[in-house]
Length: 188
Image (tube, rainbow, N blue to C red; front, side, top):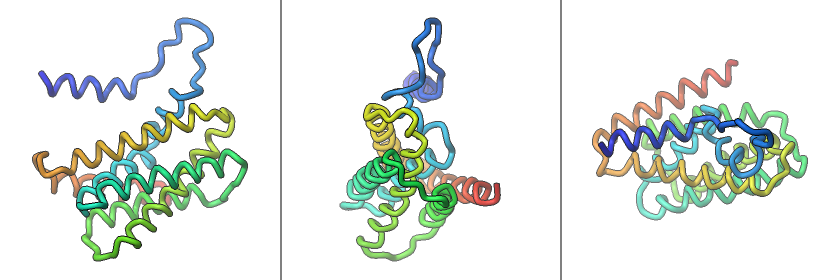
């Protein structure tokens, strides 16, 4: 029963809004919240940051997600204020592939390198989100997006915890999916 409730709750995240009456535009907190769920690139990287943080363990479990959310907020504000980076989407596609590599291989790196990689990826994702949210110029949309991002990081952490069966299968499956989607996005 718990499994069916969990699956139903997850599917409800992807359901559309009922528009029986006028005035239900997709703006504000709802649009911001749903935004990270509507693109494979954003969804996979948000989950992967949580999985990577869990894999690294220790303080990385909170430092990487917190760094990502904080720097993504900074990037989004820059994007909302009109800063435009022509290769933001290419950088995001590269970050998708890079996260796949980071999950697949246990590359030794110090804490500063882990945080720098996380911050760089977050900056590009935030910048792209900010540019996309310019039409709404809503702090509620930005707040919704940041909340969803933190939620996806938490879900990644939970999925990668040792209490979940088949952690290695999940890690490898997510890594391959990141590599495939990232490669597709770079070629598309």
